[in-house]
Length: 326
Image (cartoon, rainbow, N blue to C red; front, side, top):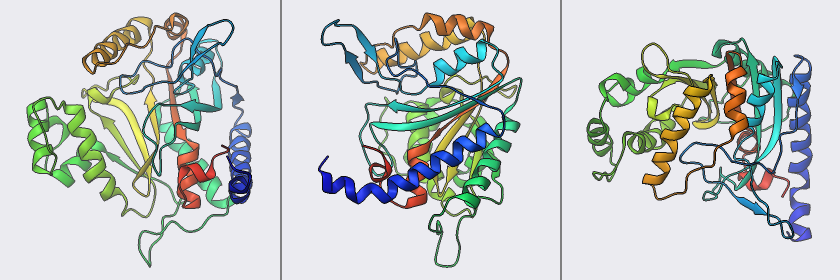
């Protein structure tokens, strides 16, 4: 980076410093343990759409991955009988950069054992309130007369109900790829026969759902996702994934799970996800054997991953790269 370019970012970096201090103070006051997740890891995760960066030693020739998130490490900590843990972890994903995406970014993850997503929603409300009260930022405007209030709570909707409202179909009515394809095509997608339900849902999320969410005067949580969006979340009794996503100004800043436990359940997901990667022509993610051992010992837990840089870029109203220390 040219030195004059760095000088242009100093004010944003000072704001970033304060932002991180506020976050750390919030979790320390609630008796969370902060841990530094490792940067060189044996596997970067298991989800099919996450593509990692690879590091290799110039002398040892040892091969590692850069983490796409600290999730696996923090779950190992939970298995060691830590009840509340958080991490502000550098994370890396080999995806196209944009206004809100960066190859490298800071991920805030926190987990509570013997806790449900209800408590994670409460954490989110309290954290957003603390940020609104302690961090100076320009109002996030919906229009000339209306702004988003971070500290007045969060709207919580079932995704299925919200989808029904904006498209006319609930998740329970979209039970085949063909039905998803018809809906996506009716909404303007150039669908072909290879599109999966997940492809169609991704299109609908970006082109319809997120645009609708921009009009809300508070952050919004959508909960209960289709099983093809399950990641490592438990499945609810109604068949939907027990997870939610948190949006500010129509932009997703966090996603939370009622965490999947047991070695068998996690390994079954791992095998399924690697088959999906093979179908996409991508190499499978290696197994993390210590992770599968750990989840067997992990208590029922809930956790959330929040993109710090993306959230900060919303507050500072700048591209994500302009508020990063790079």
